[in-house]
Length: 76
Image (cartoon, rainbow, N blue to C red; front, side):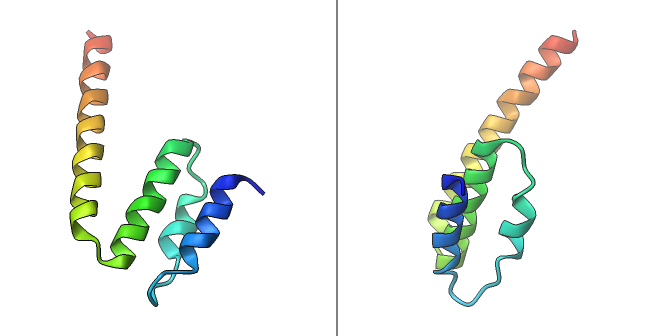
């Protein structure tokens, strides 16, 4: 069993009454870093840690924005 699924299992055990529907959907993601980030965000949400979620969202938006800029440069 990959380490990411062990991490997933440990996070699911402390889900504060929420189901793990989001995590089940994320298992098919091929990028391991995105998968781990989704687990971290899901964990923060289930714990009610909104400030951590805001930081994660900002980080993902910044990364996505940088990726879009690189994509546009390559297209030109």
